Length: 79
Image 1 (cartoon, rainbow, N blue to C red):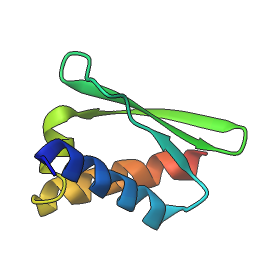
Image 2: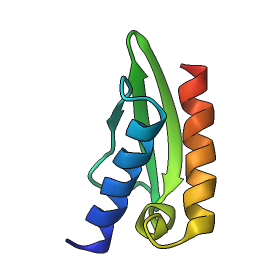
Image 3: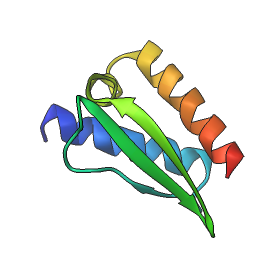
């Protein structure tokens, strides 16, 4: 598994750990090194942007993991 796939899997794990009812859609390619990620719960949808580097570093950098987890928690709470 390459570093992108590892980061994507970690991102999915973090979202499922916050709320298993949330569906996440991650684009296959970034735009200007940023991913526009969709979080959906029931009829509600929220978009967040994450940098390509943050997703790649997510499984190995605890600081990045904490930052992304906080961003996701805030977004899920807004749903």
